[in-house]
Image (cartoon, rainbow, N blue to C red):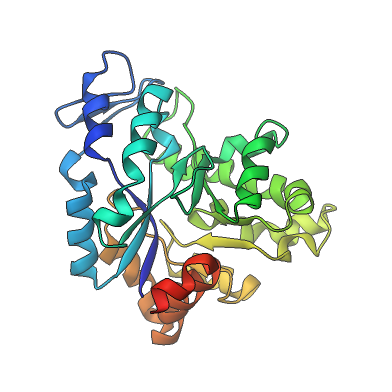
Length: 286
């Protein structure tokens, strides 16, 4: 099984709820309007399960971990329809689209996705993390909303990465000790956190903390140089392939791996995801 660990899907029920809204976030045709004033042109069809499966086929991938992105700032009126309808994605897709619940620990899901900013106060998310650990589900950490004044490359290149670095630092400093059995995946290389470890340690972080077990990074939005630095820090065993499709094309993300050879591609697309998703390993391997 070749697995993409980071894709986003809009179910039919979620899209209908998004189009019905008169207050942000809402969708009008191809214009997605978010609460903090951001407006983006999107292709709603690219987010459909059918299109996600089609792109998996074109890229030669077997499955994707799919979710609702916290960057959309979905309200409960949007998150609830997504959680209710997404539970059926795995069955409807023949096990190829495997959903994460939005900020909830629900049965029928691999785990939950949260905004990076949610981890900045671990006491607030303690009930969720406790339940995920008890249910042996995983936690996927993704950027949350950007500030109202930011847009374009600044929001995604600066604010999102800063959020992810802060979430990662909070986790290695405090979270790992409190939830030692919880598997955590940080999107977009935790905002480049692996490159910062030397400085964190020089400023007082326990040098063992970043290498605690049960932490992984997805490769979304970064290139070969960033991947090489991460490999020098952690080796390949902490990395999983993530594309962030349909925001970024799957083929473009796969090209980042090509200079490193087939062995690394197999590890990031096959071996590591199956290790990480150990509760699903036997079924997928069959």
